[in-house]
Amino acid sequence: MDIKLIAVDLDGTLLNSRKELTPRTREALTRAAEKGVHIVPATGRTFGGVPEMVRALPFVRYGICINGGSVWDSRIDGAIHTAEIPYERAEEIFDYVEQFHTMYDCYVDGWGKSDRKFFDHLLDYVDEDVVKIIKATRSPVDNFREYIRNLHHDIQKIILFFRDLEVHDRMIVKIREDLPDMAVTAALPCNIELNNKDANKGAALRILCEHLGFGPENAMACGDGGNDQSMIEAAGLGVVMANGTQELKNVADYITMSNDEDGVAAAIEKFVLNP
Image 1 (cartoon, one colour):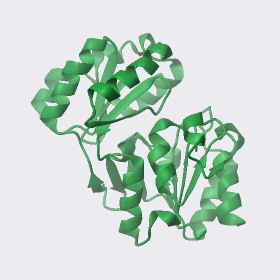
Image 2 (cartoon, helix red, strand yellow; image 1 turned 180 degrees about the vertical axis):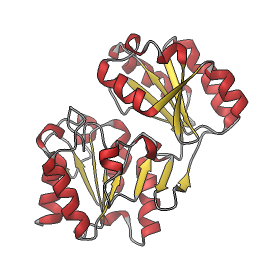
Image 3 (cartoon, one colour; image 1 turned 135 degrees about the vertical axis):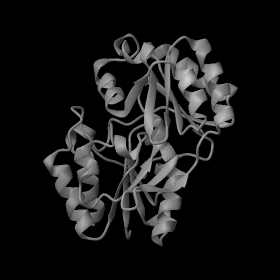
C-alpha cells in the first residue's frame, strides 16, 4: 500500500497515558515525514489546542480538528474546510442540554469557552487528567449563555461531561435519539461531543486527501475511540490501538499495541518504514 498520509488521534493514541510523545514515536513520525508522508493530527481539539510538542513538529502542517469540523492549514493559519453548528440551532441545543444538570461548554472561533461556574469546579465533573485537557483547551467566561448570545457566531462543537460513567452511557444513547441532526460521539469515556452532522473525522480525511491530490485509500488512520470510527473506516488502512474500544476494533484493518507501548510507532514501522 502506498501510504501518503497518516492521520492520527492524540489522546489514547499518539500520546501515552502521561500525555507524552515518546522518543520512539517521534522518530517514527520524523522518518515517515522524510519519506514524504503527511503527518496529520486528527483530534476533537482546535489546531491551537493541539499540544505544542505535536503542533511544533516541523512537518505538521495540516490538522483534522474539532472532530472534522475544521480542516486546518497552519501555513495559511486558516481552515480549508469547516462544518459548524448554526448559531440558532446551537442555542436550541444549549437549552436541551441544560436539563441534564451536568457540565457543558463549546468551541467557537477556534477555542473552547466554558462557564466559570463549571470551570472553577472542574473536579466536581471530571477527574484530574481531564481537568488538564480542559484547562489547556478552554477559557472561562462569566456567563456562558450571555456570552454566546452576544457573540452570535456559529458553534464548532458542544461538549458535555459526566462524572458517572453509567449515566454517560445512558445519556449518549438518549442524545443520539433526541438530536438526530447532530453527529454525537465520545472522545473520552466521560464526555459526549456534538458536531454538525457533516463534521466527522472520516469526511475531513477525504476532503484533505482530495485537497492534496490523492484518495483516502492512500491514508493510514490511527485511533482508539468512538470519534475515530469514521476515519478508521474511510482510510485505506485503519489502525486501532490495543487500548481502543471493542466497537472500533471491530472495524479495524489492523490492531496495534497500546498507546503506552508505542503502538502508533509500531504501525508506522510496519506499514510505512519497513513494508
